[in-house]
Image (cartoon, rainbow, N blue to C red; front, top):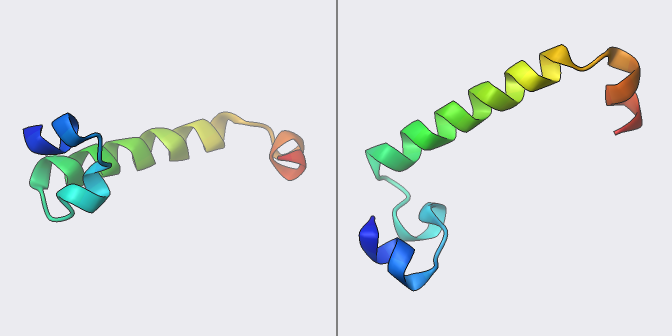
Length: 47
């Protein structure tokens, strides 16, 4: 994990099976889904 940060590589490339990376991805998806739920339908259609 720390080597990926030192090299400037995305975690998905340098540590694809790392449990921390998977937790970060789940959290990001959850936040994204919540934000999509708060946006009115018209605004989503324009995006």
